[in-house]
Image (cartoon, rainbow over all chains, first blue to last red; front, side, top):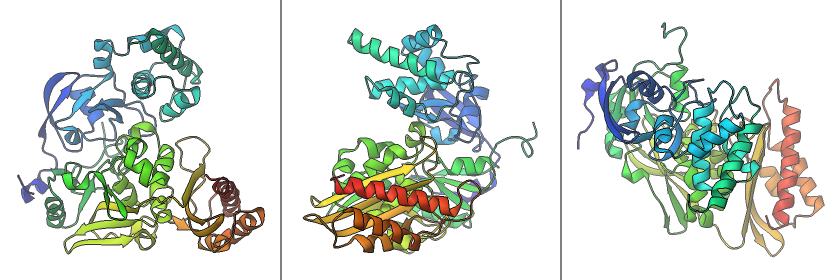
Length: 173
Length: 293
């Protein structure tokens, strides 16, 4: 087990190699320690579906799943995620895991500019994996950290509510 | 892009992932104490991004196994410092033996923050508007600290000193929090007043009471968002001990609150308004406590 090496203190601007499993694929990146996960995903891996908004954990536009839990990728440095499994909106889209949510958002106009949409979908995906039939109150509570400046939220809550009901009615999903 | 002027980006730092507590303490000492421990990072990363802090070394403590886990130890529930806020909602041991923390957890920030933020980190930061630091006071919890001189345990009553100031010395870290096991003759209640769910509370309160039949044998009432640190309402507690929770004694506790809380000047929430809100909240919570909570 490697202890602390003082020469590290003089290498703050030097990049280090990190490895993750992003959307099921093993990747390695060279990052400076101060580089946030959202910047790494967008700039190094060109996964631009994750959006950088406030960059201080207030707007919720940068959600990704790290080891299966939604987190703000602006509130995490890429080096902290070394060895983690990361799932972004691109991976969840490709796997079909959120296809019904995406269709319902589309059908109900639950987006306008679309900036907040990837994180809204990730949040909804996580909520429905934990609570099969959330109340509208629970849906609103789950979305409380995601800003949408277009829709007024009502259509977003409608879409998630409709998918929860459809999934329950459809049985196994 | 000119990062100095426009961007929300941290200054350069070195990063070290510690595998043990000793490694973490050693790294901090050898960085000349110009280092910060990072766990969930949900308050520290914004502070770095806004350049309110700019340490030369970040020591990641999230891979230290000893800081994890929840388990019974004698009369206490030991809650590892790295326990995430979301675990307060899902861990059966928390619900059974520290139900006040379970009740407070949904009020802590938003789900994605709760997925990463840690109990130890919240207590170490000691944000006066945070739920968990105040609840350690209500629970009479003990905070276990590791430092160069070894381990020590500090009661929550002695831990919170002033604004973001605690009994933690530079280079020390919290290893676990010990909460006395919840007992059958106890009741708890928690609530807060906020303009919007997940926002910082205008005022918040949690309490733990021990009953002897219908009379209060002991009670610890803790407020947050009322001043420089989480604050026990000792005068209100004294007004209740030995009595039942009838309208007369609830009113006496509300009146006594003026001796406990001295909210700071604030343009949005003037001191008189905050004290009023604290009294309203106290009245509601004592009512719920009297009904069995």
